Image 1 (cartoon, rainbow, N blue to C red):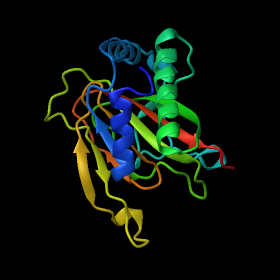
Image 2 (cartoon, rainbow, N blue to C red; image 1 turned 45 degrees about the horizontal axis):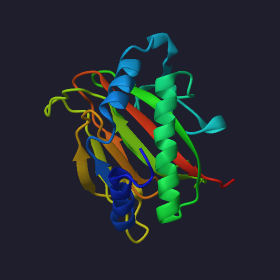
Image 3 (tube, one colour; image 1 turned 180 degrees about the vertical axis):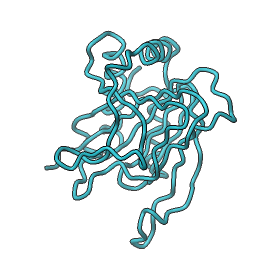
Length: 209
């Protein structure tokens, strides 16, 4: 996929107009199925319990989030294809929106039935180098009533605490749906699901200390 693809252009337009974008069928069938086969066959021993915070501030809190993750390092062909997709998107975003995106990070996320991630922002306290969040779902034939939605909240106004922001929309975690939003502006949460739920969480970063 090139930087001038309709998908990437639509994402850029949405981000410019409203700060977030929801795109169904965002991946080719080959890439989506390859990622699904990879994540669904991961050995549980490779997964790590997710936490909150970074480096010395990192901690695990089951009352806030309960998913398990595996960082994507490009160790096989399907992971490299995914990282290349993100890199192409990054180049398009920089050229069209001048965001100055410098690097990216990405991990698989697996939610078992009942797992959740309470309302939060994708930025660490005192840090502002995460610019864009990207969430892609890998769940074939996800039932509408199975839960597991991503709830996106609106951007707080007039210095209102982000905890008091209002619900903007809910996104069903259907196969190849991608949600992209400004990390500092949109609080969000993951609702409990009734069945195992697969996704990839990614972030584009700017080169701030």
